[in-house]
Amino acid sequence: MKFSRLNILIFSLCCSVCCNIEAQTILTLQQLRDSAFHNNVTLRRARLETEAAAHQRREAFTNYFPTISATGAWFNANRGMAKMDIDPSEFITPELGASLAQMLPAEALTALSSPMSMTMMKNGTIAGISAIQPIFTGGQIVLGNHLAKIGEEASQLQLRLSENDVEKQVEQYYWQLVSMDEKVRTLDAVDSLLASLSRDVTNAVEAGVALRNDLLQVQLRQNDIQSQRLKLSNGTALVRLLLAQFCGLKGDWTISAPSSPSTSSSSFASPSASSSSFASPSASPSSPAVSVLDGFPVELSSLPEYQLLQKNVEAATLQRRMEVGKQLPSIAVGAGYNYHNLLDNDRHFGMVFATVSVPISDWWAGSHAIRRRRIAERQAQEQLADNAQLLTIRMQKARNDVEEAQSQLDLAQQSIDQAAENLRIHRDTYQAGTATMSDLLQAQLLYQQTLDQRTDAYIALQTALLDYRHATGQ
Image (cartoon, rainbow, N blue to C red; front, side, top):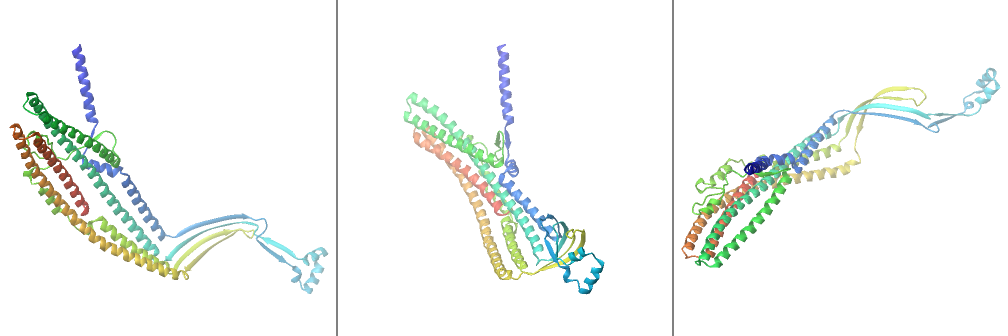
């Protein structure tokens, strides 16, 4: 019965471990990029700006159509807005007065001889609808539509730049984690070597054939490895938090290491073997970078930065032309239909009209505005020419950085081979009693440093390749 319960407990623990393993999501670099493209706050804001620019272009297109407006008003005043005094006696001649005296009673004649007041428009209703079609506006409508289109295209280019920046940041976080993971594996291998060395030295001290100081040096080295492990652990946790926030990651996840790296523990187990974590000396690691460089086009027209500068020049030119258009006459035609009952009877009428607007006093200020826009256009052109040279220099520098990083990786691999042989010799001479523990630990430290240098060189190469892809519009 106890055996059965033990089996059940072991089975439950195994199931729990398996569930935890399955719950952890393993993310590749491409999956991290996709997650960042969907969840990154900067990209979401850039997409909203692109959408707003598209609506602005559609808004500018509506200026081609007539402007239709309707108005209506009702009022009730405390007195009539129009008042007229009439004195009938001024219009009655003596002959007419004699005739009226025979026809009208005396009261009516008296009323005709007294002044009278008449008020109008004490209350009323006014309504109308009109449509105005611009005929000529100095080209402002056409230029405004072109300017809105350039704004939309510029926002799309800005979105591409934001996507490049996000991709670059994601890859930097990714390679930082890869570097830290590789260095942790190196520390694991160092720990294994030091643990084996500590056992051998402990036995030698107990047998009286080694000094206790040798054991203390090994223990100090082990403490140093633990300190390095703690720093790497804290650094990894921080980068994971930054990457999770940047990509919008939730839950338990880990990264999928690139296919080229492998564990470096065998390097310590057998230094003469000198296995490569990131590149094999026989694989000619310089060839991939060279082939990538040769395959990239280096044309300024493919760069979103250059295209954005071109859009800036086009926009400056259109703004200058629009400023000129503001100083030209504008012509419009329209039609309307109106109603009012101001004279106590309903009146309906339609009308057509034309308007001509000529700026006169604005010409003085407008001439300065045109000169200001012309200066802005010249500045945009000079900025395009200057930044074109800087972009060309950036591409060349990015290529140089890739070649330098590849050379550093080659040198790091050669250093590993030399440090591995140095470690093997010191281990053999220590076992033969002709070398000190300090020499052996120094050789081991040098070998660990060369492995870390190769890791840093490999990450630097990946970063340089990423910079080169962005610098050449890939």
